[in-house]
Length: 294
Image 1 (tube, rainbow, N blue to C red):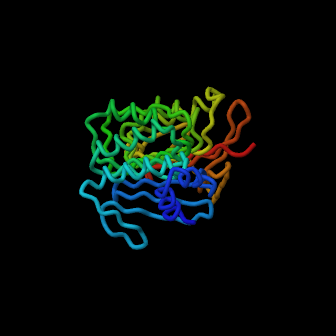
Image 2: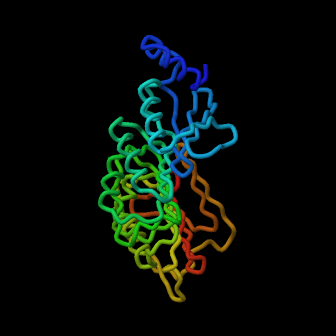
Image 3: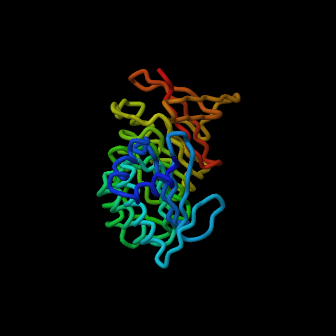
């Protein structure tokens, strides 16, 4: 039986409700999209079933409601109770309503759900302290992606999330060098776009890495794009930028499910004998750094 049929079965009686988890529903994965007010359920066979609470979507089951967000929360709580799953495959925050995001986040925190991927899309949030508190409590187990349109302000502070492995931030004006120092000791992959980090910031980072000052570093791939990299007379590690190989080179690495690739980089070692590849180009305003497999 598919999730909708199992849900209908659970409505028959309490005994039927208790039978539903026998269908393997504890392994279901939910996706919550607050942009379109949808809940999708992925089964163990990777089939996906979608409920839409706002508009008609091809292939989705439409639920008509005067208050769509309230109806979405009602069904989400029912799904948790009936299917007994705490797995959130994807949580898209939506772009406009912080209170909607907060109310769903509260449910996920209270139910101790694990979130594989959090896609943060809210355009602008005045309640940054409240946002930091929510993000620190959400159990994001794999990736955090921040949309280019999401304006967190220049004073927003990244707080290391316990289970997070990867970040991709498209509007990283708030991500400072001290936050990068913290992130490399907890994350596996870091990608920052529209950053305000400078050539001097990255030069100091490289010098620290060369001196072995990141003994607990977990990040193997760091890619940063910053308008502040643009400079006619910039240097790092005593070398004039751009730092790149004279010949065309490609370095690739897989670390579990994570993939890194640096094109045109040079290979060098730190004091601990750890090899890395670096491509640092002020004209392209890009910094690509990857620790190579030892």
